[in-house]
Image (cartoon, rainbow, N blue to C red; front, side, top):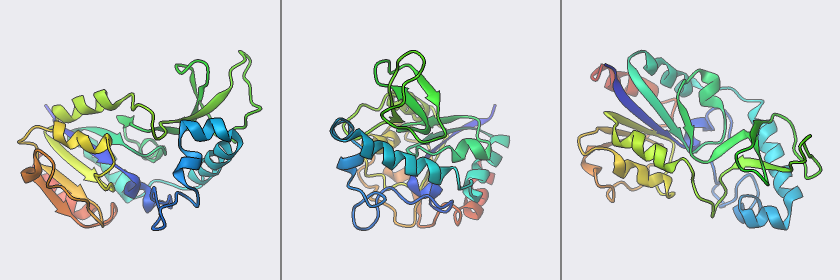
Length: 232
């Protein structure tokens, strides 16, 4: 039986594909205050601005491709049961070929009905407030905004709780509730944390199992290949 490898990925995973990390040094997201484009209140206040913001992100996403780190995670499926849990809303894991991807914060290439949250469909073009489908549904981006519950958090925690190995790539480990997932990993689960600017890890229950590598996602691939060879 293959060992279960859980991979937690954040914005740094896709940075080398050309997608900017969540916040720039000035605290803005693509030039916007997150409170203006990534909260339920923002959407109520100015839906046109929010739609325009995500339309731009969607266009950007369709112009980039997976990088070597995305491709390496696909390669790992040959030897492990790989479950990816990502904070990213892009589809680069899927495009690279990963078969099990859980999106904690939603998906940029999907939209969700305002009146029926279960009605979700793929979307690859611009979305406006004027769009109404044949059943009379208005839509919003299928994104978990600040202040909203994270519906798949319980599923993600379960995967972590039965992990044999955990890899964390491209996240500060400071944004909750996603950062809490490491505390669900068994105490014996080795954790490899890759980020060029790693966050603090001393507060995690299993901090003694965390090995930190200050590299980008792509730079980490040779190192991870050597580490993972020991667990096959």
